[in-house]
Length: 416
Image 1 (cartoon, rainbow, N blue to C red):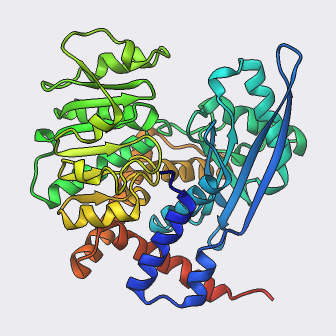
Image 2 (cartoon, rainbow, N blue to C red):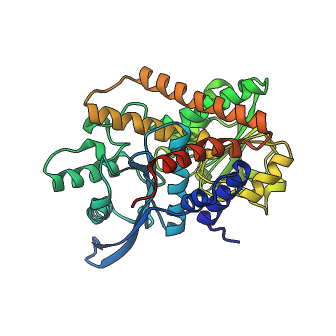
C-alpha cells in the first residue's frame, strides 16, 4: 500500500493538536503550506534529444524566518512528498530554536542516468526557474537525497550570476572553498551520535555494548555507522539500494565505507562471512538500536510487529508512520523522532548560513561543540515532556516545536 507522506504529516499534527488542546484555527493553519512552485525543466541531452523534467520547491512555514530545507533528485519525488518534508523541516528548526522555517525541493529524475554535463544543465535550469523564491532572506536550499556539494555549488553560481555578485548564503552544504562549512558532511550523523549517546545514558545503557542495524548507507547512514563502529558497537547489518549485508559477529564498517565511496554497491562486496539480506529482513533483525536512515514510510502497520529492537533512531525523515508509532510505544520501543534525531544537518547548515552572512568562519571544534550544545538541549527538553506526560518521544518533540510555531502565528497575527 502506498502511503501519502503529506497525509501522514497532517495526521501527526492532529495527534499533537489533540494532546495540546491546540486552537482549531492554528491547527488548520499548520496543516497547510504557504506556497508551492512546480516547474518544468527542459534539457537538451547529450544525444541531442529534449527531455523535460518536473521540479518542485515548497515553503511550509516562514513565520519564524527564511525557509530551510534540502533538495533531492529522485525518480520517486512528487509534490506530496515535498510538502511533507517541508512540514517536518518546520518542526525541526522550531525544536532546535533556529530562526528558520520549513522548506523542501526536488526534481523527479534518476541522476544516475545523467552525465555530469546533463546534471549540471538540470541543476542550473531548475535554479533559474525557482530563483524568485530562494535567497538568503527567503529560502536556503541544501543537499538531500542524491544531491551533494557540487550541485550546491552550481546553484550558488547560477544564483550569483543572476544577481551580479557572489551570494554564498543562498545555499548550504557547499564546498568549503566557496563558503561551505567544515563539519557539514558529518553533521547529521554527528547529531544522531550525540542523541543516541544521551539516550543510552538516560536508560542506563552503555552505548559501546549496543548492537546496531542501519538501513541506508549513504551520507547519514554511513556516518552514524562509522561513528558507532569507532565507539565499539557491533554493527550487525547495513543496506543500500542494492540490498543489505548481515554478519552476526559484526560488519567491518571501515572497509565497507571505502567500498561504497568508490560508487560500488553493497551486494557486490565479496566476503564469505557476510550474508546478503533483503530490506524486510534487515528491519526485522534483532538488535538493540535500529537506525532507519533511508527514506520515509519504512516502518508501517504492515511490518511493525516484525521490529525487534529496543530503540529506533530515526536518521531518515518520516520513516515511521503514525499507526506504527502507536504500536511501537505500546511495545515499549523508544522511537527517537526524526525532527530531533537527524536535526544535526540543519543545525550545521544554519551555522554555515551564519558564517556566510558574517564572512567569518569557525573551526571544527567550535562547530561540533555548538552542535552538541544545541541538540542536547533540545533532547533534554523533549525527554522532560516525555517523562511528565507519558507520551511518545515524537509527541513530546512535536508539543515543543508546534507550540513555538503556534505562538509565532499568534504574535504576528493574520494579515490583513
